[in-house]
Length: 199
Image 1: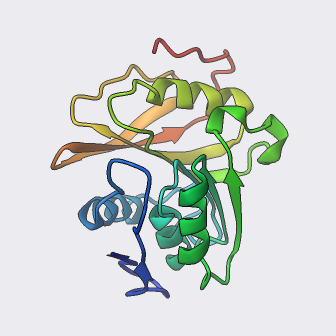
Image 2: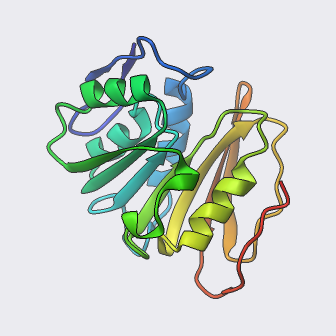
Image 3: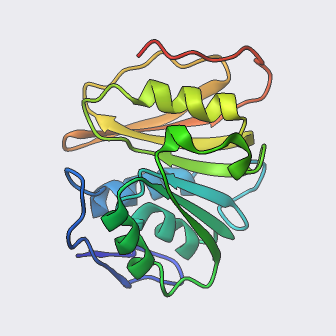
């Protein structure tokens, strides 16, 4: 059982029963991520998470997106391929008053126009570890042009994870918690070349 850490939904319980993944992002991991975000003053051109459009990819329990809503995000889009995980997200998100959408799909199969062009302020990307897919995820997101200028991406991967970022992504912070590495990067419009992952 997880709990919302802070914000207007602080203390709300989030179920992990029957989740189809190695393990959801830990409470300590979520705390670390949101501590980093709270110290950054530009999230998609906004001073804070307040009013942000957030996308939680490989959402699992939905805990990251729900935490963002609790802290002021105006809209959350959950992307999750597993049917049972989608049912779990629906149950966990039932108390949300914010607008949210649940896309029961593989990230790579979502039509480009399903998420508004340049509309996303914050995106969480935490695909299954040791699959070498972060690069492919970034390629998909960048080529679909979903990110607003100055949007932030939170990448969660195994500790050994290392990737050469394209020029349009600037690393802000990296933290290691147990066997997980959290890297926050900023999208800066300017390099219009199509990005192709080396994964």
